[in-house]
Image (tube, rainbow, N blue to C red; front, side):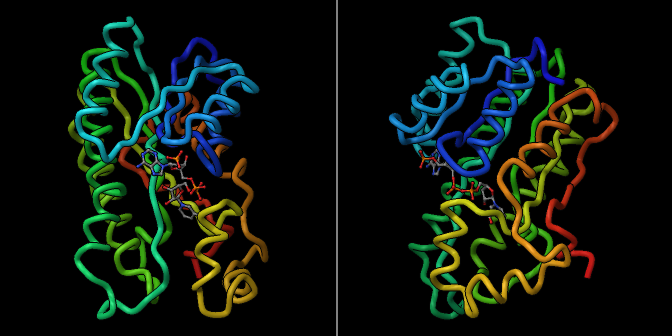
Length: 244
Ligand SMILES: NC(=O)c1ccc[n+]([C@@H]2O[C@H](COP(=O)([O-])OP(=O)(O)OC[C@H]3O[C@@H](n4cnc5c(N)ncnc54)[C@H](OP(=O)(O)O)[C@@H]3O)[C@@H](O)[C@H]2O)c1
């Protein structure tokens, strides 16, 4: 589905991003992955047959230098996946503080905005497809997850408006909204989620959490021409959780 395409996966060192990276390689794309963990990123890149560049997307200067290096190296991206994010420990809003807000928004919103800005600039006049990985928490409220949920609502807002900004240049921007997916982030969320995994699964009509490759398949479809008339859309991949 992605033969001849060059795809950037921001946050490729584990979980959903790793699954996206591997699937895009399998589908014939030239894939560049990023993340802070160099060893993981390089191991996955060597196994899957792509490239890896270490990058912390909360480091403004590093993001600017990364996109400048791509351009200088003649790399032209056709697709980009903004997957990097962090979650929060479940806690009521009045127990949260500004430092937590700043840390989470620096990555989940500011970092995504900064990457999206450079990706759109690189695609101007040529077109492309960008997929932001939001969450079903970007569509509805979840007790104890106010900051994470607010950050993912912001990603949905960035997606919808940037889709309009990019449309005249054939730049499509969509968001995938994963439901609960078995990754390191999932393990961390289960530590503080009241009722743990059993109560989470009980809310999922398909009766299980998703595997990272199930999210990757939806993301690859949005990157490909098979979704050529889809833009500004939010695609929940959640086993039916949000249609209840
Ligand atoms: N798992 C779920 O149940 C679930 C549900 C809904 C939505 N999501 C969303 O799906 C996406 C992937 O989640 P996941 O569960 O696969 O998470 P994960 O296993 O924790 O992976 C997160 C990825 O983001 C990268 N990352 C974190 N901080 C970064 C930074 N400052 N700069 C660059 N990269 C950074 C990590 O790489 P390094 O550590 O190497 O930097 C890693 O590759 C996230 O946007 C998440 O919000 C997940």
